[in-house]
Length: 348
Ligand code: IPM
Ligand code: MN
Image 1 (cartoon, rainbow, N blue to C red):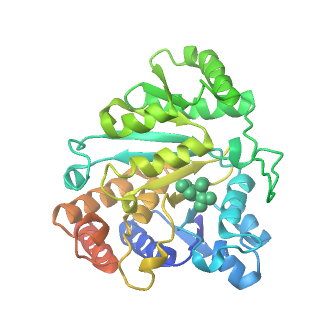
Image 2 (cartoon, rainbow, N blue to C red):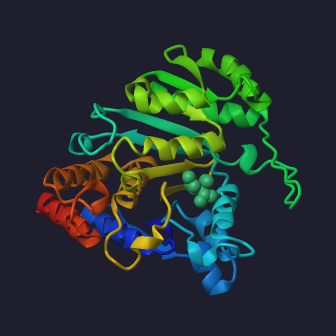
């Protein structure tokens, strides 16, 4: 019996989680995939329930789980809180040692014409974002009114381990990595390049190119087919993954996986908690559903179940059942129920 820790998120987060868990249940019904979910207080819910966005019980529960599912956190109610939901998110990444964050951009046929950028069908790349170091975590950090400091730090071992995640991933894909940095300005970026030159010979079947982040930002829109695996630092990966999300037409479809050194991986949509949509049955459940599919593949080696969910999702999209962010008129539950129905057909 697998243990899945559930952090259900704030604002529209719980609606997405409910949709995702309904799909997981339908997809695993009648299979030998047995699991139990336990919900822990986290983010805004943690602040509301126990006054802490990352309570110890949540850290312990996640560490003891086989995988963690997280829906989007944060929102206006928590802005300016002493410890914000976002601090909780950075904290759980650190506590679970989730140093590698994988964010795919894959434009399927059904979404190919929704993008404001044309000729994107078939675009398929993954951003491998370093998640527990860099300027997000560097020290010293000085919070001042007349002066403030953030520090970007990387050690060679931190760079090496994220590079290896990306190179290995490229070996299973199109055998190309792009290192995105700002080596014309930043010392940390020059370290990334030096470590890449040491690591790359271990992956002779993978070609490497380097791109400054400003140029990469442009290429993602102008030549999105150029990319296979992008490996980059924490802040650059944060920014570029939102940009890349324009290609499939909406942030609302993009999942992510965060991999640790040992212990459970965490799966979450890359976008925020859509406070403007809360309670209206409008939020796109696909980013959460796609996160769950990824969990089935990566943590549980259940490509069989994941493939069924993926093809059910494609059929539903091809039939035009989509939420408003994708130009459709369907509600969260319309999309979810349609996917569940497709899965039930499969099972029957
Ligand atoms: C993300 C988010 C977070 C980040 C925020 C909410 C702290 O933007 O997961 O991309 O910057 O990592
Ligand atoms: Mn982000």
